[in-house]
Image (tube, rainbow over all chains, first blue to last red; front, side, top):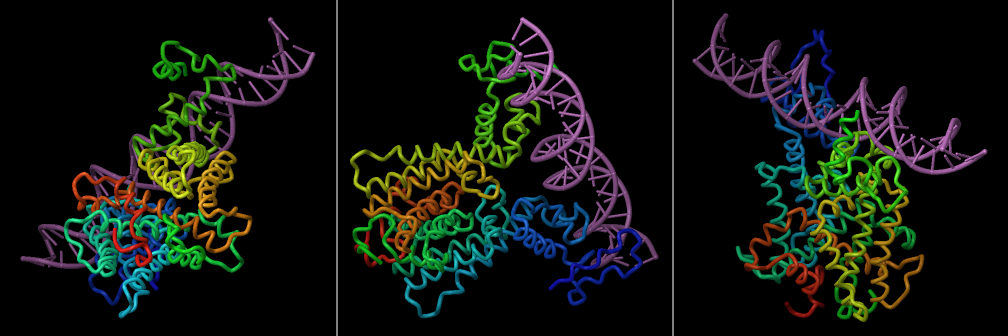
Length: 233
Length: 233
DNA sequence: GCGAAAATATTGACGTCGTCAATATGAAAG
DNA sequence: CTTTCATATTGACGACGTCAATATTTTCGC
């Protein structure tokens, strides 16, 4: 989509300088560098993993000097946090993707869970970054807003299923009805993209994929009290 | 070169030179450096987080040269993997800690889950390291064995609860009966130690702690199908 | 005991990283 | 056109992982 632009001839650049985004006059020096850096960062993240994502690598990928990102993100945590914010926004979209308009609360809940895992599988590097709080700066407004949006999504679905509005104060049961499904789906996604389920899945009937396993986890016998869930699914 | 060695006295005690493990004559140069490095690494991990755990920092903490760890661990992944192996062994012990002899399979299962989360809370840095596969080297025999032990623990408890031995081949329902509880407890632990549940827990009645929330998650309404789980807790 | 051989520890170097300070450059405002 | 400011570059510093060369200690054959 975006031409990574010519390498700008190093020293002797006789070519026209600012041909970067002819359509958008809002560019400064070299165009919308912040956005370009974010896209480059995501590319690096999914290509080389979180260890390969550095400020200098992002600058290199875009073709600017190693210190250029500082103007837009401050430090590494800034870049990672902005990228995580982008991820959370897309995350919300992924969870909403499978929810149909008139679906029952239970179906809606399941669709959200499937979207949750689907996003993690599609963007494992981004997902891991988003849920690795140690490297993020949650004081950044963009990240905070994106996180809040994704949190509101889940509790909204739980509200609809329970048929009661969640107030400022929560009962233990209300909290558990949010944290339970969240934990189940989050743990599944984490274990899956970290390869922890591979040994188990290798022993399943041929052709059984992660989606089938997720379906069985969501619908099968209860995790804690099998007596009530019938014998076989 | 002698000046560096003088530092060893600070950690070893009164003796100036190689009095590190008087009981075991199997020591080489400076005592059991490998074990000392592992202990130092764990100290650093819990004190400064995973970002502060470096080969050089571990060497510094013990008082040896910056390249000394290479002899025992090869590279950074080696140190992290050996430390993760130690963690998995302790992890198994933590899960077994709450299981009583004649307890029912369900109670045993719950005890394992509580031990799972308790370990994560007690050693968050170690737990995160153990479940961050990207930085580990699973070809290391010690790590492989420790991981297998912890995996066998969970499936063993599930076997007991289902009353059937798990064979080489798995049905989808069998796999789900393992992955479901695992995901639930793992996700809860992950979200908890990453601070993701803090906003929710702040809205709970005063005095409600993470253990109470975990209990509600384990015993409360099912994550996916509340109809079967009785009315409401 | 003693010397050879192996194991272990140190030193120094290289390239990469994040970050900072100083400087240069292009855009916008007057 | 000139001032002003946001943006980008250059160069430096310390910390890191890793490697090669060297030094020191333990172990083992005798």
